[in-house]
Length: 310
Image 1: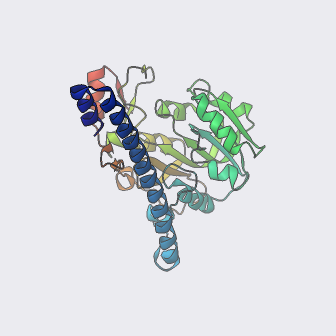
Image 2 (image 1 turned 90 degrees about the vertical axis):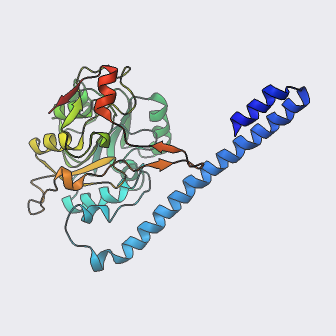
Image 3 (image 1 turned 180 degrees about the vertical axis):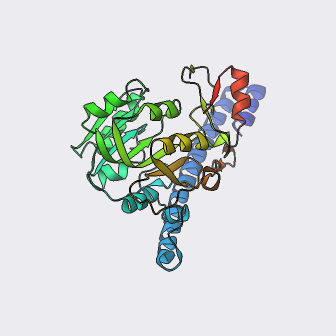
């Protein structure tokens, strides 16, 4: 629509018409912004109503089989999708001992730990490489004096120092990792704490079977959008080596949920192929696609970015 308005202004070119068209453009921008907000809040309300409806029938129909024992309990308070409910479900199953968390890649919303910090008063650290994000997080969650905030680009070289200086060494209840880059290598290097439950963002563009991650020396400035992180299979293999079992992925195809094996040995792990959820396509208020599947290996080859099979 705006392209049409700009074209009319160029063709007709009178000052009065230009002023009228400017007003039309501003009105269209306002309508578009309103439509986006309406779509956003309608989606949030719909999600909360769906969660309430599911809750009414959990006791009657839901068994102990994963991934359904986690995904059926999903809801959203602070998380990007509906991870909050799944986090609580797994923490309840694993048991809580220290009321503590490590959130790497918190964004301004607190990531997957915002609910733990604000609603339950847990102790932990929120970290993000974007200064504005961490400032927003500090404003939002700074009322809890037990939460520390760090503006930092987390790497395999500094992840353990970060955890140790915030007094979160040893057993913590919850660990979340979402940095859209070297997630696999940071997790591989991380030895300072032993989470009971972990949430790891995976790159669903890799698909359910490939065990791939970006190379540890990748120049992220040259990596195309979508070429980052690691596949679900790669993260699950690494998590298994570190003593964790995969139990579920959220339906949006964003995060994978793990529990330490020693806590509930009777609960069987879920395979990466069974748990995998592809990236759910999403459109904006005008029906334009915001997210859609990509061929990450092809994009990486074209950009000269190395992928590593692990």
